[in-house]
Image (cartoon, rainbow, N blue to C red; front, side, top):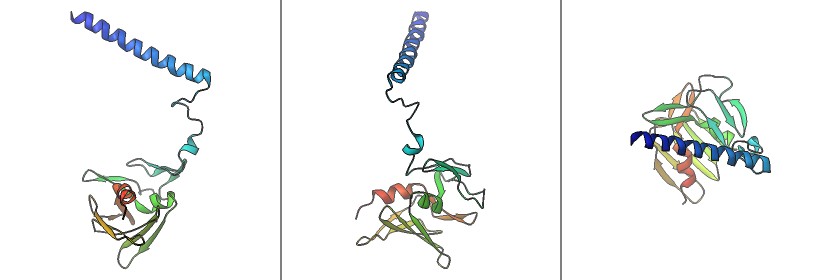
Length: 164
């Protein structure tokens, strides 16, 4: 009885694989769009930043680049199960601006019509957009690594989601 189930499962697997291959092959022949061969990858990656933990290289708007050309030690990291990313690279790659205040060790981020204030050592981010002041707690405090300010990755999704 077990051998019959094994034969049927192998047969079904082959049917699924063969059907999938034939489907994508027919799409390619007909000129239809295939997920395996995008028309223009760089066009699809505009407005995106792709980082890999432990790597100093990234893709910003479809272009391969160093996160920090003057310091190859700057790369995404994981701390307490939270992904930390260098704030300046992310923000400037997405068309925003970053202002550093060395006296208060704080950063003002302007991105997506938002004005976010963060401070190294603090786990509070303040959205100070016009007619709106909102605070939210970050997973872990903002910190300095290799002379750069790192923030939890979810800062960007949380800030974008907040509406005042």
